[in-house]
Every structure is written in C-alpha cells, then in structure tokens.
Length: 292
Image 1: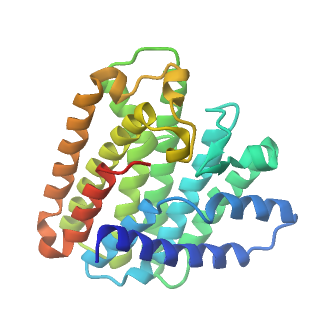
Image 2: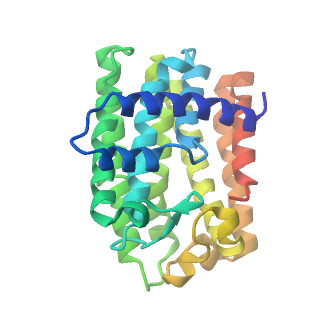
C-alpha cells in the first residue's frame, strides 16, 4: 500500500467515525450541529488521525481501536482551524477550498462550533472501546498538546509576532507549539491505544516532532510559492500579515533543504520498528513533496 492509499483508507475510516460521533449528539439548535459537521467533515488530509492509527498499528495494536483517539485529535485540529480563521486571529475567508466556518455561518456560530468540537473531543476519547487507563492517558496527552503549553501557547506567540522580525529560536518555539504539539500528541495517542512501551512511545514522538517541523516548513514554502486555488486556502497570507516564516528567515532554497533534513530525521526515528515503519517513512516523503 502506498502512503497516499494509506492516507485515503484511514481518512475514510475517520470520516465515517466522525459522522457517527456527531450524529450521537443532540444539539439544542441545528445550526450548531451543521457548523460542526461543515468544519470537521469532507475535507483535509487527515494526517493527524492517520498518525494515530498507524502508530497504533506499528506498536502491535489494532488500528480501528485507535479510531476514538484519532477522531478526538481531528476534532481538536478542526476546532483550531475554525478559531484560527476568525477575524480576531488570521481573518481568513477560505479553508479547504470552501468558505471558512465564520464566513459561512457567522463569527459567533463559528466560535461556538469550535468550542463544541473542542469539548466533544474529550468525550470521544472516553469511548469504552479502550480501557479507562488508556483514556485517562489520552486525555492528559491531548489536553497538554492543545492547551497553553502547546497549540494555544504557539498561537499567542504567532499573534505577538505580527509585524515583527523574530529570530530562529522564537519561530521554532512558535511552531513547536502551534503545529508540532498536536502532531506529536497524535502519534503518542496511537502508542497509548496499542498499550505500547516507552521505546515505542519515544520513537513515535521523535518521528512526529520532526514530521511536524517539516510539515510547517513545507507550509511556509507553499504559502510563498503556490496560489490559493491549489492550496485550498488564502496564499501569501503570512507575507500580507508581515509574519516571519522559514522562507523569510532562511530563504526558499535553504527552507527546502531544512524540510528535507527533517524528513530524513523523521525516518531515522522509525528505526526501532524495522519494516513495519515503512509506510510512515513513505508518508514523510509524501508530505515533504506535497503541493497543497
């Protein structure tokens, strides 16, 4: 199976599970459910939930048992995109090739849809398909990655860095929180679902941390070189908002070399898994060479 086929297969499983989890919820208003579905379904590469499921598999677990954790990660990711697009943040009107959630439903409904997905994620982590101790570990891991020590912390650095030139250390800290923390948590949740050991957990985390940095560098390259129709979101946004990126800090060619280096380091981290890690190695190459 190719990395693309693996992504597609896992995306289909996650899509079906997300639909079921949201269908189980009874909202006080249909518009909130509609906004949640609009934001989390029918779009995205599903890289993070794929990491959860594949890290579970290579640690000896059953991928489908990791589905609740994978869906929780994707709900957190989707909530972050809703809030990231709001006028008070990046003020972006397009996401995944369609109007962003606040452009479609209004700012207040979008804000609440994000809040609803954030809280639903932790409910989903407690699906009884997994033992309670695994769910508790998953809740702790994901809450730390999504909170002020991770994604939220990275976002505030991002906001404070607008119209400023930041150094390499600040840029890396920002993206380690904003992007890397959730990607690392996605991998860790897969190991937790498999009840893997410490060596497996560290290997998957290191893979994901390097993958996350490569993913962000590649995002910066695409923001500077691709057009909006190819990206499915507004291109050139960082330049317009006067944000420092790996491209503005290092230049396009050096940024490409950095992305390739992080890809190599991610693949090296998979060494303990032998041939079992090949699909994740192929995924790293696929994401480094993507055009959207």
